[in-house]
Amino acid sequence: MPDQVSEDVIEEIRKTNDIVDVIGEYIQLKKQGRNYFGLCPFHGEKTPSFSVTQEKQIFHCFGCGKGGNVLTFVMEMEQYTFYEALKFLADRSSVDLPDFSHQHKSSISQENQSILSASEWITKLYHHLLRYTKDGKAGYQYFNERGITDETIDVFQLGFAPNVKDFTAEFLQKKGFHQQILVKSGLLSLNEDNSITDRFRGRVMFPIRNHLGKTIAFGGRTISDQEPKYLNSPESELFQKGKILYNFDLAKKHIRNQSEAVLFEGYMDVISAYQAGVKNAVATLGTSLTSSQARLLRRYVDTVIICYDADKAGTEAAYKAAGLLQKAGCHVKIANMPDNMDPDDFITEYGTEAFQNQVIKSSLTFTNFYMRYLKKDYNLSLEGDRIQYIEKLLEYLATIESSVEREYYLKEVSDSYNVSMDSLKQEIQSNREKMGLGKDKINKNRYTNKVSDHEHVKKLLPAFHNAERQLLAYMLQDVSITDKVQEEIGASFNIEEHKVIATHLYAFYEEHQQADVSMFVEMLTDDRLKQLVTDIAMMPLHENISNDEINDYIRNIRAENNNKGDIQSLKEEQRRAEQQNDPIKAAGIAMQIIELQKQWKSIN
Image (cartoon, rainbow, N blue to C red; front, side, top):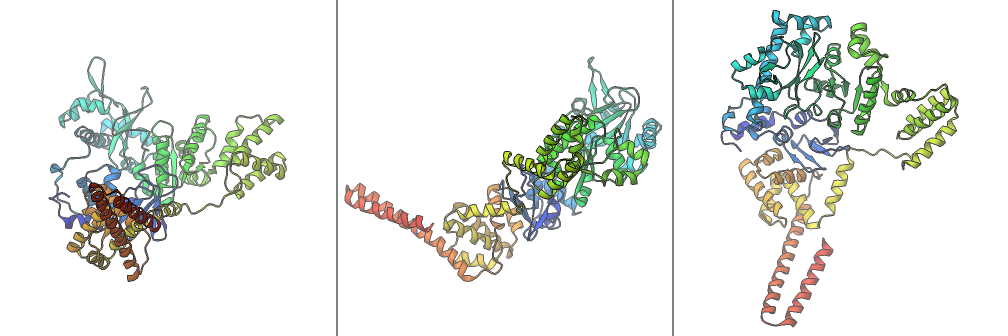
């Protein structure tokens, strides 16, 4: 722990940042009993096994084992140093933190820090030019003609890069930035004759921000005859377009509040939608949706509405995106966009209210969309094509778990194509059996399955091992129980890690005199111990533990200690008998050892 930051300041920062609120900014948490559960952000999973307890201010993943308090989480999630995590949380809760940044090594390389700083300067410069100068008038007029208001321009920090080849280069050079780094970041371009020019000159500018709101790249759109029409910054360590979503930093709080995300294809669609009141809007960055982006959305929300252009290319892209989102575990809807229109055009022509009500709120289920999508491959005026279409559609409908939903769409097929419900159901059942789906399964509570499985694994541990874990769990929440254990057995636990935890806990209570798992975790320096403590602290416990139960745990631990001591003494006696060339005595002692080991195994 850094000497320069006092323990009192660290505690104030930790206590003013509720762990449920902080983690809730990264993943969707749902309350189950006393704890909150969500999808672990540290490993891929479809069934939530990541648990957060508000009472103890700690988190633990039953899948990958990661655990800790709010500081640990931020350090893991952002790859921050301890001081950077403190600064992040201090800023979040408006706590004054002494500036010791110059004494702490940053998690971000010097080069990347320089790129971030240059990007921030350029964001402000281009935005200022657009809003307040003659040099940015052409860009301002472009947005104005697209119906984008000054307020929206300010929210998205939209800008304009003047059509001057060295405008940006000279500005950044005066600020002390090295051209080599600026070329590498893509702010400047290196020509074949080794001259340097501005990459985005003559374009309206869209700053691309990471989830923390820091500009990491730019998108530029030409307002003349330049090629290409859209130009992005090149990929770098900071900017990997397959892993981030445009506007995610602004949209994530609205995504959480509305329990839905709306996915678009481009910047202008997001900006127009945001202005139209659809603030849970994000977009891919000029490429198809990736599995990484789909998993990112799934961590935040159950439902994603895909709002792509309603042309052939957009429909194909929507179908592929839907597949990735469903694979990630999302419930997918498709916006009800009229044929051959895009979201920005619709808003311009019909207005914001019509967009919200007729496009977003009237979204199609994925099944409804798929039924329409599938028709493009068949000529339904031909009997053979109709049969093939129905058979293909039934293959998909067979994968739907809900029997009610299946029957709803079967009825639609039956009415549309004059096929009996009995024959359709029979075909569905046949398809389900071929797929190994069989009878409908009862959907168990997916937020508790993982936990119960995990607890089951713990019960397979030896009795003394479970006793030590249970005892430590009670010690972590009760000082008086810890005092009793210290007096009875001290640190005489059988598992080495448990000995270390108990020793640290005795010292912690001597100093602080009150139970605080989150603070205790912060005092530990070994990451493996931190994870073990949070795992133990998450164990279900009785609210009113009896003295007899605590004594049972202690007796179990002592018995294991005694048994190990007896076996060790006999082994030493056997070794002496062998050294004295007394094989009969040595064999007799060996039989005693075997008998004691059998008794030990039967107990455990």
